[in-house]
Image 1 (tube, rainbow, N blue to C red):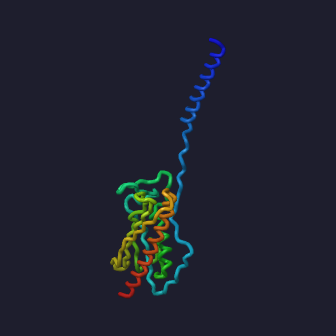
Image 2: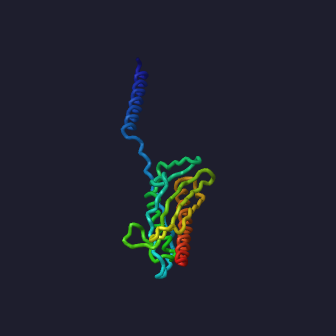
Image 3: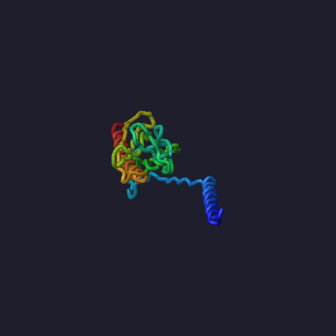
Length: 214
C-alpha cells in the first residue's frame, strides 16, 4: 500500500471516530428542552372605585370554580370542534379560576354598589353571595384570525335565605392579534375584562333591585 493510500485511510478513520464521538456526546447531552413561558390574567388599570353608601349590602365571593379541563394552568386551544389541546411550552402562572378571584373583587368594588366585597372564607358576614364557574377559556383556530372565547356562569344568592336572586352566563369572543400563544393571552385578557365588566354591572343591578323589593 503506497503512502497516499495510507494517508487516505487515516483520514477516513479520523472522520469516523469524530462522527462516533459527536454521536456519543449527543446521547450524553440531549438537546435542551425549551423553557415554558408563563402568562397571567391582569386587572384593568386606571379605574377608580366608586364610594358605596353605608346602606349598601356586603358581597361575599366564593372562590371561582372551573369546568373539567379548564381547572389547570394549561393554555387550551381548539382546532377541531369538541377537541381540546394545549400549548406545550406556554402556561398560565396559575389556574385561571385562581387568577380570576382578585379580578372579580376589583371589578365589583369599582361599581360602588357594595359596602364591601370579600373573598370566602372570611370572618365578615355577607348579605349576598356570588358563585362563579369558568365554562371555557380557549383559543379557537376554527377561523382566521383565531379568537379567544371566555364563558363565565354566575349566580347571585341571598346569603341569609340561600335564595338565588339571579343567574346569568356571560360570554365574550375576542380576535387574537396573532395566531400564537401570546396573541391568545392578549385576547384572553380582553375577553376577561369584557365579561367582568358585564358581570359587575349585573351584580350591581341585581343587588339594587333586591333592596327595592325588600
